[in-house]
Image (spheres, one colour):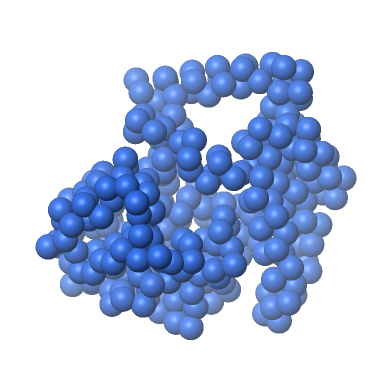
Length: 308
């Protein structure tokens, strides 16, 4: 039976950590090795980890150099044929791991599988369902984002490959690109995980940094002899997509003017890419006009529909 390795990197996330850990430990799949890498938390995270220590394959609490370093430490201890990481404020849904193993068994040539996921608030209430589609390497180079909590990889996909510790926001996306260059990735229309969005999460707290890393990814790809020719064929779309990513996260970070500017740059470089997300343009304008609460009302109503 396939062994599955799950890694949780954690730092001062005691409010959510236990739910994360139990979502792994309570999976119905019997062969999971669970690895927790804590970055010397100063809250009661270590007490929570110790509570379940007898069910963990390995855990440590020590200073590290950030999320990528913690996950890479976990990779070094993982021995499973299937590997994933689950951040300490996200959680798996019941039956996720069993479904993943079945997909890998049925598709022996696939290196990475990804499902859909829920977006939840700090209280665990669902406010959106993120349904993805089958993506190509070109799509990834154009920053079609996959929800990381719902991603699982074969161990063979990570041979001589790890997370780039100089990235802190799009580190997962850069890894997906490198894996997709090696072989097939496969989307499964099943909901496997929940991603938590809260004020302290980096997808909000440091939203403006995401765009910078998108441009860094493109620079790195240009220097890769295997990826550069692929990027050359979609150069305008890829550059516009990086600006669109910048626009999205600048908006989340409360910078509507900068977001609008980034969206306009995307429009100039490759109009279809920008026009596919006119909601960014509209939201930025509303915020600049002092009508940003309209967007919040829309998001709240969407969340209420998900609760019904």
